[in-house]
Image (tube, rainbow, N blue to C red; front, side, top):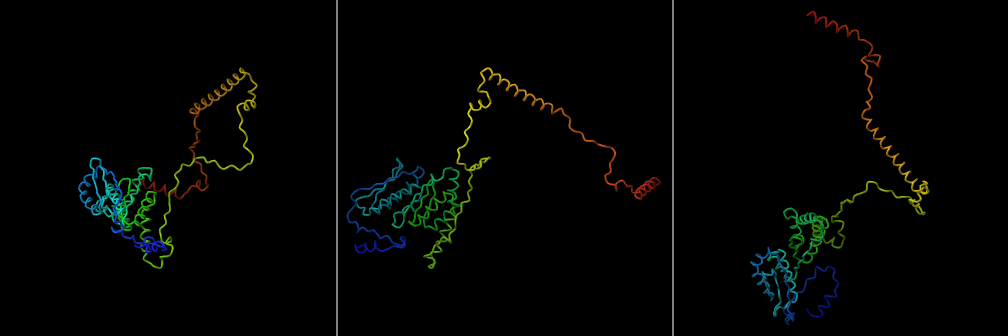
Length: 341
């Protein structure tokens, strides 16, 4: 790219930065080799040792194409990438570092090697410290994965990224625009926003992008809005103290012990008189307690109030007093007939 083309490239106003294609960096752009050797190393867990041992020849073959050197140390449990004298791309060592980081995070080699491409990047999102309680963390992490991995698969399809949830991290691999969406979805999920809201928003945006008329309009009216329904679980006091009326005067000072003694006259008594007064108060209080206990014991021996029962039926209604003669005669006739038979 000539100097004039570079100047025009930077001076032009850009409406959509994502539409700009990254210029290809070729060996002709860096005819001189790198001055210093760059080296990056990362450790991997014990359970990844077997897989890395099997795949390492493929890793070396892939990095050799970019004139890089790779080493696997099974004793220390580390992977190392280095530049060589033939390395002409100064940024490829950063890409190789990201590749071994992803492989240490349980991302397969077939996906990790895609980071070496110019249009592909990676993002390792740490989610372990975003939620305090372990139970909530596990639930929200499972919410991100979804039933049978359905939510995670939909995120991958909408963002064109490979996403792997492993332990306390989420490893994402794909185009840079998709990585931004993945990070937003993961952080919102850890902050108790269900991923279905973000997934729906991405689906709606994808459909709106196809319509040329809505390209320069606000899309907020089409997107789903999340409403937080969490109610404060702070314990409320049983007796709430109401707000007193405002008064410019200071509150009345509380009485001290000496003020109380002056009011009752106890302050002017000598020690013997004070002792006798306390004894008298103690005796009165004791007598009152004895009287209450006595009344409580006597309450069990008090008979309950009896109701007056009378054998003679009292008629309240005048019609009940009248005797039905016809009914009485028929009843007597029936009884006589029964006796005769």
